[in-house]
Length: 270
Image (cartoon, rainbow, N blue to C red):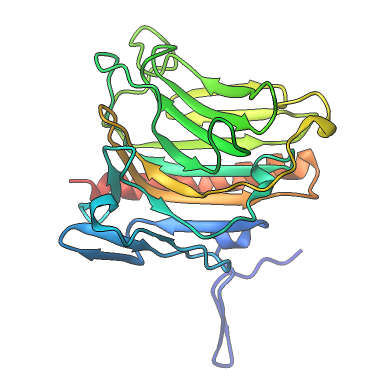
């Protein structure tokens, strides 16, 4: 197989440089360095770089996140967030394969026990969807998701993120890559937050147990009193129909690119 990168043929430029769009299944790509509409330091829109046009917006000024250093979409309250009109992200709760990725710089502490902030939220208690969790009140700092819409509402969380004695320790106010990947019924769920990686079985033993209803909302980047969410990049992939081994390969490709971008954010965050 011949690989062509950046070759110019008779005035035609072929650029096959790999990016997040070149990995199958991209539904959303928000980058804090681009397509951010700001007025008075507050964000009204965060544009999507994927082909899906899933822009995140907030036109109520009191609910708008702030913009820091030309990098970070920032919220320190559950009532400050971005949202989308999309109601077709059912693949996040109906048992399909997917990946949620981010570059984040959360500010949180065990001294301020808070139950939850979130990166992505499509449904809370009593509804169908996926509820993000970034909490300091249990598990010495935990991150992950709760699957809503069934009687059991199972969770997949990684813990001890703020425990200095744990190998999972990921200090507050540092820049991390984070991911939550459902690789399917066989390979299960993989969670990454900074220094910590955890794997676990799928949310349910069988596909028939997953909720199939629609989610009622789609919000992103919501902090909480005591937890400041700072997000520089958000990626969502829908890997419905792909095999577990294909998803594992896609995940490795996304993480390689994301770690490169993390270095750029670290250099710019001065």
